[in-house]
Length: 551
Image (cartoon, rainbow, N blue to C red):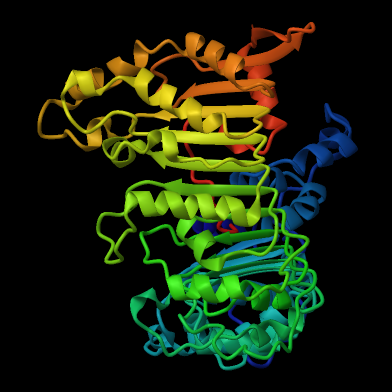
């Protein structure tokens, strides 16, 4: 895409005249050259569409080739298409000198840049052997960045290596006052220095420290973001140092406007109360680390002994059972999503997994801690079924809306007698009866059909064998039983991830003194509309990655 952008510059007649130190600061008028096409009166008079409609239509173009073709036609469309062409700049390493030269020759374009993304680059040594012209252009890059007075989003895939290109780049970015979104990867010492100097009112920060590569020399504390204390609303942190918050025993900085905090880390050296002291207005808290991890029971005990209230604002919690159990929250949470009960997601993990019965006890303890009304949980049934724990998963609770992904409902064997979905699903009813469910969404996922048997039978034969127990299961009869046994149920959804059966949607009503139950089958469109209006709008169809990484 970036090649197309600068090739388009050339096709438009924007020849990259080599700047010199004498004329680098001069303003060059960005007008079509004498060779640019200029419409005659007959062309203008023959326009089928009025100018206002034509210009409005042009604003919807996203393909740069189409924009460039329209800009070739006349000066009016040239000038109107220019902001569309340069508002998004993607800079690969080899493009940076050309980009700098173009901006120096056409400084009026700088204020049109709204979003800039800088691809992964090598270190500054890449330019050591280049000619004097290239080194001069790299030296002028900070001046170009300073002139981007309307830049709103800055993304850099290799921040520290990019900042090493020129020592003045940090000051150039710090001079900008309009950046609202930053997304930095491979954040190191130079990157943290930039964070402490940025003066823009940043509202969303996505910070990837990438210390998983073994560079544990980077330190981080919440004070690093103090310039954004009055503006920051969303914060994503991936692989920060394990002691990222170690030095924050005394709360000095608060971020009262942060409503969403997303952390991808192995352990947190803060209690929930300390975290709430830094982010007092939090509404969405997410811990992304999804691999098996050992619960620190001592940390759970310490958090339980701290009786101070954390949040009154927290509305949504996204994390696995181990995280939620260890933190021992002292607050209610309306919606707990991405809970996971089952075998380790990654068999290569060096962290031991708690025994299945213990993991279920953790899950039940968290339900008692946060008392959610809405719950989204993935249950991998293979091991739970082997240990005879299917009917003991859910505790009594006040949950009214439940989505459950039931994975691997059959064991990883070829024994047909072991693949009876009815037995598993009947045991699940016992769990559902312990809550006053109004909406129940179930998604059947036979994830282990091919994964566990790749060398026993050909894949197509294995799949056919594995899904037979699902295709012959009577979902309609099961819906009838649920309607009879769940007295508060209003809507029911049963989906099949691999489409072994058509998805089913029902509404439940009760009439008369005897509360006669009536089950009404809904159309696909009606059922999807019910889910869209619920907390589970993202649970329709095939399973997707529910994590938003801030892109």
